[in-house]
Figure 1 (tube, one colour):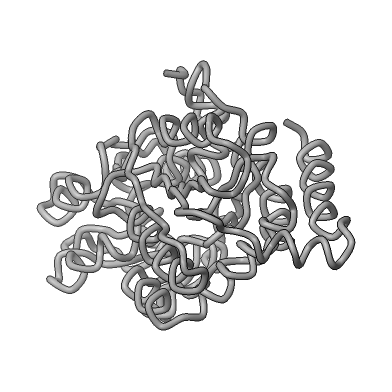
Figure 2 (figure 1 turned 120 degrees about the vertical axis):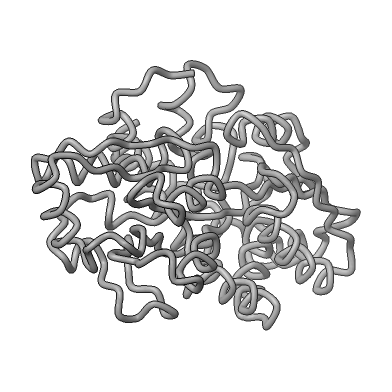
Length: 329
């Protein structure tokens, strides 16, 4: 889908929330929720998506007086959860927490999907999931991106682990190879845990993933962060971004995210109240503590900011995944 089409749709959605008379917006927003809210988490219990869903839901329940019941429905890159939301009534009493992969990249990674993000859903709030560090085995004689590139050129071979084919970490390998004329191998894993185990043990030379997952490796002295993605991490202030170190790919400037998603037909007044509550939740102590544990320096974005970010960045993510030349599942 083109930038123009995505932008137009998102701007229409953003404007819809302001289209009702003021008294109607207040009345309908105050009436929601009128019963328990089902919150579908698109990934397994214990993971980041699950924790985001539960932590934000606790705040929403406390503020509205209604239970927000989290249900994990994982599988097919979040597609099973998305299909559930699509089947739900568009009244704001079923929500989904999921990641950018489900909403954007899956349209390239899968031959067919049981949903269409732009026709079936409204993304109420994006929660940036933090910059992702690229970390090398501590014994590798490199301390920054330039030294790693020089090492890869000198040895004629190097590898970087990814937590999944088609993921941001896969893009790291592809985009560095493209810019610097390298032939580094992307070593694909099913998740971060086995990847970081192999980085620490020296089975692979580097990996790219989340701050929270790699922190134990760094603390144990088995890994060194040489670059981070979009912006510096508050808890790793001395580690420069890829862009600061000369890497020019758009992949290193885009926002990976968690998100709260509603059915496309949800009333604008409900979307506005939900958005306002999520932004307020992002300032609450529990959410701030959760973010700190993941090295995340940003919280839930407003509805308008969410639509703009999605419209600006979704097409770029799609192009980057296409450039990986993967065979859709």
